Amino acid sequence: MARLQILELPEGASDDRPPFVLVVDDTSYPTVEAYRAAETWWKNLAAQVGAQGCIVTDDTIDIPANEITLTHVQEAADGNVVRLRVEPDLTGFHEAVMAEVARAQAATRTATL
Image (cartoon, rainbow, N blue to C red):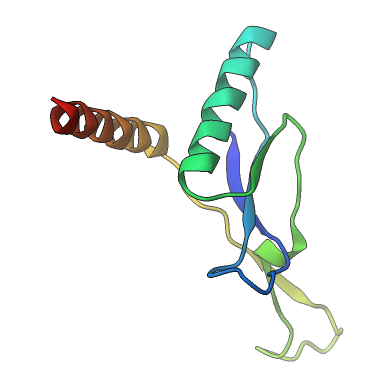
């Protein structure tokens, strides 16, 4: 199942909020055409939400900043470090985004009439 991650970029002096890139990994598409259509969709979404760009890949990309390392929660005798990885549940995400896009398009059409 595809994952959506955010890769924060270094802030510039004039940035109102930290710049970021959307990373969509672990994708699986049956054809090159389907992949290209999905990539275009994700890149359009990235532009709409203010991302600096979008990476869509079938590889797995682990972004260390998206992992939370717990080191002093409970001291283990063997010195092991506990890592907690938080991954979003994107069930229904595509449908929710498409519904919002349709609503925005309808509002735009109504406003221009």
